[in-house]
Length: 207
Ligand code: GRF
Image (cartoon, rainbow, N blue to C red; front, side):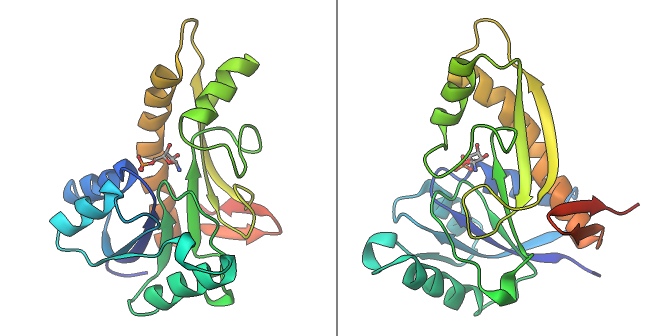
């Protein structure tokens, strides 16, 4: 792919992940353009971050839709108004049923090592609390291709952090988020360079 990769971002919350993408673009560490940001909540602060950069935003809320198909179709209709090479889920807490035209072109990041501590109800602080309650010694983050099940698609990259005595969900989340800020841009760059090859449910990273 020559020139910037054209991204669409789906989010539900504060948009720190989106901000990290902006920061990497500004530092020339990522050759990308964010074409549109779609929020699943009208008040999501991530939408403000996008508006402040003059990026088009739109709100698609589940509550206005009769089912996940209608919700997903509305999202797809907005994506189709833009040039989109890759869709980035960035703290997006809803299920998006991915249509064929975007298969293999939607990424998600989860703040734990999939397949542990993931799934529909495990997001945000709940993930880190579950990690601490279980007593595992490492956690981390996972970037994966999204499919039509929460946190299920082929794993692209994982980064590991230690769980330290005395950690709280907040301290662990902060340690994990630092790694997320490295992992997500890296996965986007690999996609942009055409270096991610899907072999069944495995992602092979080409040299
Ligand atoms: C991150 O922990 C990420 O792994 C998960 O959502 C959190 C970021 O949300 N998918 P936000 O960018 O702060 O809204």
